[in-house]
Length: 265
Image (cartoon, rainbow, N blue to C red):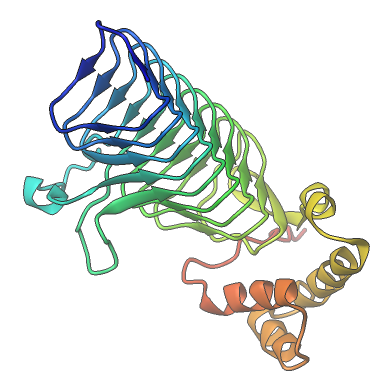
């Protein structure tokens, strides 16, 4: 363990073996930093924040502070915090806000899975749920309660509206603006963003040819006609697990699926 004498570590903070805390970093009394993490110069870890092993928090990132919400009440933030999995890389000036107890669906924590790569100046608001192997490019902005499935990539300068859910394996292109839910394995782009096709690059990196072909076939069936009717019909055919994820997502969405609008005349 290597802790700079210029770092500020409050009494009660738990810091694992092999950690490096650089000058002028701040670690609050309720923070838990697991082994082999690096907290770089000027970073702030506050509140009930837990950071998984082998993670790096870069300079001037602020993790665990209260949410930026005008309806926030101090009482709704009691017993709340941020949990980040192992092998995270959180770059300069990122802000990750604490969860809340604003409603019955909030357990008090903003959650980020393993192997997150969150580039500089990103913002993750209160009560977000991010899966494993997430990539957020520079200045991506997530509103409160956003959910990202595993292996989601969000391009730079892209905001995602509060309560939106992005399914597993999706790619949201840079400089888009997303306000509706995106079906697993799809590619969305535009302002407002809509589904343009499948994230074939991501699919080919993860799955063998047969699974990619099954997902591609399902996509063509689902997006020709009524989405929910097609999803129900496809589920009756006992599709493979990846196709089943697409069908279930379509049937449960509450914000709707953004599709290209036909222009008449």
